[in-house]
Image (tube, rainbow, N blue to C red):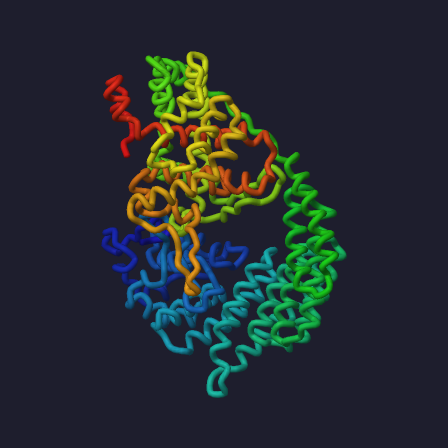
Length: 616
């Protein structure tokens, strides 16, 4: 692939379009370039500006070849691959060093020593070195050129990052050649310039540059750990007094690394205390609500490394909980334009024209279907492809502001190895589907049933009797739970039905010849929990993937449902049970109870709608 600077193509001498790998540039052609003239208008001698100047020579193939060389992104942190493609798309990318053919690299090998621009000479020599096209002398040339370029950029550029990158690359290269028979003075020269830059930058308002330089000092042992520790503490103190708490934390972390290297536990404890103080100050002076709560949690975590701070941590925890509760007031209500579901409601009512109560109960139990999980996954993937919102990550809070789930940010769909971001989108969508089903189908159908019939305990007992999902002796839980739903008491319904699901799943597994328990080495047995049961192959084969996953989402998922955990621990208010998830859960149980009666219903009523009914 070719770079954007070459517009993905290079013209050869005969006018044909050829790839970079096929394009051969000779030393003589490079010598004929008037680089002084081409680069005369460049004010800041960075590779980006040099690339632009070279790429402007549209009819000059050698110049545009050098532009391609300069197009690669500079990443000095990676000692082996310091040059990376400028862009990466699905079907193309920018230039990488391996795109250049050997003949052209040999021309660069001979050409780079005579290039006057330090920045360009450093890049050319470095590429020759990493592609093994030259000798160790080219590494030496690159080190010296990077150092000179860094010095020049400190004068020309307003950005500290440009000279820093050159210093870092020169340091990483020169650290490889410190033996007496090589060039140890190169490392000394780079280290000396680094220390000079540190001294001139440590009093600057923003200390990013000095922090980065100090980190390099620690990594390459340029100064003693004690010196680095003291310098980092001083930077941390200055930034703390200025109210730059994040910068103070960064400096403290450098001091912490130095203290760890010295194995000085006392110093480490003092730094953790300072880091905690920074987070507390940031929480009090700059943020309120959710951000402050996050800061206080970090303060507690840091303080946990400090002995004798239990009371202080408890006090901070209380403060954090107050901030979490306060954060609920910060969350604005986002109201979108309502969707007209009158047609869905009318269709649901029309489908409830029943002959008797059993007919009505069956129709209600099959008025909708559990959400199709595979369709949800496909829809979520398509949404992620057309939206950037998910790349920033998500924090999910409960009604008290406590964090229940953290979805990490990401740069691409392919890096979602555990499927967390896709699952988060799926949970948002399934919540919308369940809401539509509850408001558009289930509740209107339920109203039709209870308006036309009196739903009695005897009627529910008949459909629950000898049921393949309900173990003997547990019928009354289901009868009373379903009756509560018909009376719109979904709180009672959930409290009766939710605890029964695990046992019923275990009952299903036994019917399939499976033993849903674990035998431990000491001879004791433990029943498998609901999470394991919902993933059990025999249960999925019986209930189907969609039904088991819908139960898992409503009962266990921290993003959407979590109904089992909320009910078991009792920390949610009664109003929770008027929500969508409890109502849909109640309908799911009715669905499970009614579906095995499909044959009886068909024989008695023989409606066409039976074609839509799921079969066990």
